[in-house]
Image (cartoon, rainbow, N blue to C red):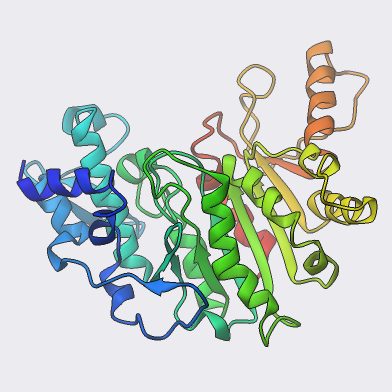
Length: 357
């Protein structure tokens, strides 16, 4: 395996070197178009670190299949990688991480977004972000996934579209909606509240408080731990909920809790009520994974009713009580999978319908 690949993987573990590896070449070409307070553009990357080159060094290339999906393909055999043959071509450990890094970089190269450096890592945004009246913010979960990546395994086993937010980005862009892909994992496995808070303060708050503050609307898609961090940051933006600058909220297997609001010492009772109503109201949806024992076969799009039913088993009644206590009465939709990592991927079409751009 080429030294370039191992160097690239090692640099993904270092915030200093990650500036070279994770940046989108396309983004840098337009680096001068976005002007935001306290946010600097990432320096130009080494062109040799494009995703297609990283994958080529590992013996892979990208093939567009008959459905128009971009698929990871083993170059020697020309065999498309699937869940069934994955272990034959991608070993666990360092090779897994290196191939995943190449796949993530390939997506960033294709997203056609701009790379902005914050005090807490780089993020990807639409060009001329300040010009949009509506902006979609996508917050992924904890781990080694980079901005806009939903699940590394899905990138490699299924398609780049399924393993990333590519479809949501294209849908937003084609409808004149801006995009921000937040990045909370820039320090390897770290997913700190500080990372999220800094990126909110440097990217989102300036747009809310700027000249267009009366018109710009933010929609949010948040997965897993990203949902908890979204709620934490919304507690400081309650006034924008009232002014309708906070639009639709989509949680995918989020680990947030309404107690983050009810027990927040910095909010008045009125503010708690406003925010609590927002996160369970008509502008909010929770897309959940299927329960392995109680609902393994639920189809994508089926509604999970939190209301007790006379036919519910004791286990189902307990589960619903827990759900109402943690998430309230938010409209909840099954994703058709028991895989936590794949919930956003499986819910993408439903999310796009709900956004209705």
